[in-house]
Length: 222
Image (cartoon, rainbow, N blue to C red; front, side, top):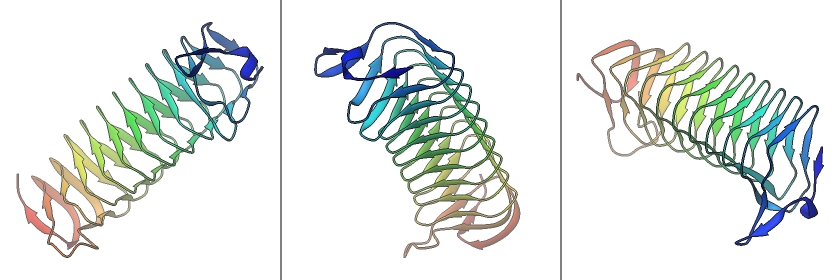
């Protein structure tokens, strides 16, 4: 299924699609449409692709049997789910959870009201934030901060520009590093740990227990 400007209605300066979309195969949204709004469910057994200059916003969920990719942002009132990868030139946002069988990558931030889960890595130029947990089979990397209401777990490393905070534990099979901000969790487990790597001000590592070698940061026990 291929959607162009003529398939949408213009409402308050935004292109709107009022019907539920459930496609066998790929859903393609033509380029340069801006952020188009689907009032209901957007679902495809194949890929969901919004070309350069176009993004996807849905009042309900966005689901793809394969990948989801947008030149601009991806936003859903409910969940975002892909059997393969999720990639956006701008931010990715869901009122509930975000899940991908492969990786998740955003040119902006990644935000979920519930959890974020990827079979491979999770990467954002901005921040990564989840109301529940964040879990990746590979690494987790954010240009901004990483925050989770529950735990953060990575099969590789965890890297943040501006701090890492979890309501539960932070676990990484490799290293954990924050370049400018503190690191805070109930428990931290990793190979090596550094807070404030590029900061002129000493940054804190705040945790009840730490398993791993602390390379940099002032350790404070909760």
